[in-house]
Image (cartoon, rainbow, N blue to C red):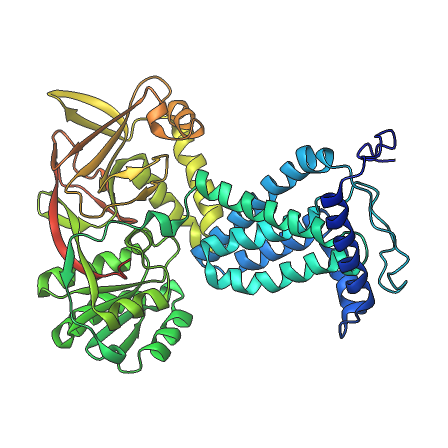
Length: 495
């Protein structure tokens, strides 16, 4: 027998208001029991059972994750987090605070009754709380996905009364508690919509009705076909060019000669190439994320075709900073990150194996190979002294919660380079891994950080690997990194 059932609790004395409420609650329960919804006797009991132990919502979260969009993945995580908070609250406080017995099953047709009747107390409904928590959490992150999940959540809540295991007030209280749990999670971890990058500095960009004047170059190597088709449907007057990876640069140059707005669909490396062309031709840039990570597009606030099309048709854009680096005759720009040391070696090793075993396994193998070497891949003059460094990172703008992989930027026009260094020392690989497991690098004594507008590194050996926006090249000696404030105009939907 469940410890939630306590038959030793004395019955409450007479209370007119409470008695009236309970009588109304019972009449509503009996009214639902007397109703026959089309298909309800077959569907609702099964739906109710599928929600036991949150199985239905874990399956829904898996389906959201399979949609392979950042917003759907975040919605799934937020929905499960909200469900966890709601379940914890129900089981520790709710069920033990009000010891209400389950309703009698006499008015409920036998075909609806669950084969295994719950024996815990009735108030509040845990199933309704979980359903409301998951649906509300999803909706707070993605209203569109929330609208898809809400009918299922409502049906689960209704099923608890329809199958006779809860009074209506149990369900209402549980749903309210579940929605409150989702808002509590949002208060602790704001949604992406609450943390949009600052809208300033706003740029004057042309509004392209139907996409007329836009020439979009899509990198076929990034698997962009689905997004390109969606863009063509939304902007029928836009010109879209699908190019193989080796032809992207040439197609960008051709497109810039006739475009009013230059567009690009691909990963961060492809966007970097398009940004160089846009800067040289003085064109605004429209970025449609089409790669694996898409740091620049997501930090900009463009996550899908709908967001970009809205910005293009309404003429909404901003100016953002650009990072620039030079080393001898080598020069380039970066929109996200520039790094020396262990990270370029990780990228090089990953590229050796990714075509054979896939991206994530190749990344893990690369980390093992590089860290096992346990050596300093970089030496540079810092503060007048040549020092061994495990990693030097410069971000185009201030990154928040920096680990081995960069976090997120909230301002793409702050005029600063976010410079992070992991110093060398005995067993540098162990130090780096310790910093990673500690969470943000700021918790590690091997870490140092500074925000500057320009950085010069002397004593860098020619041939040292350098990474920028996921691309790898070799230095030609001393390296200079600087900031180009508000140099690039890009489309971005404004709040």
